[in-house]
Length: 359
View 1 (tube, rainbow, N blue to C red):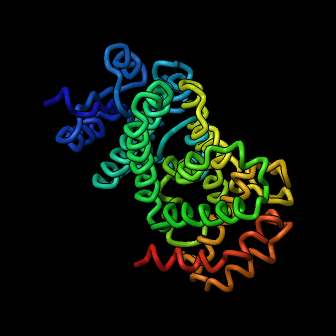
View 2: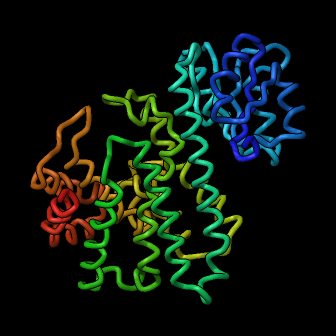
């Protein structure tokens, strides 16, 4: 049975904490206790774990030094690390994330909360591996088993998008709604012949599928921020904004290990640019106008419309008419004015999409 369970290395110089942690985890995972960072690296020579629980405050080599060493070794760089620490200041948490930590749990920790955080990280790794495997095998299978490949793509996308919405429980249905908003916008663009030359180079099905991954980077944002029951502080919002670069890095890693494919190209464009603004005040790059990929300019309208008509802990849901006015008033500042005109032509379809999905 142990061979089928996920492996966790638990690192803590306090023997009481080490024993408590092992007792908590051993029913679900194969646990390898390590009383020091040195013992961690000794264990890694024989065992590659699915996750590392790492104390920060340790003698000789602390957790920050240990994670730097882990991330510098290609054998260990993809192993998710959750910091366990008595530190609870914002600077320490930010430093941990900057060094590559997947999550941060303060001691004394809640047993059920720690188990949930561990399960989330393992699910993230499994989903990333599934997406990578899909991308690597797509090209060689497409000619022989097209239908099978499409089914596999849909299965992986469903897994990853379900994971994003499972973690971000404040935005239920967002991914499905934005998919259909985009389809409506794209259908109208094609009908009118707008941006015809650029769209003619697209794989439309791949683009629409890639839109489901626009917020894939959120799987790496801590629950404390992702599901905070209130408005984010400026510091928390800066962390939230990193979901774009996290998503871009994940897609680039897949592209480095897979054949070129339209699905990945569209995914990279949409993940990286859907928070840019027409006037250059967006993020993460602050690009503007036609420098923003058309994929991202379209997604921006779909994404913002859905955010406006959705209820959040820090705001009520706006009406369809109110959301439309905000989008139209934001032409040439937030949004491509040509696409705002396209939106104006079909805005009633957006309202119908919301009603149909609710039903």
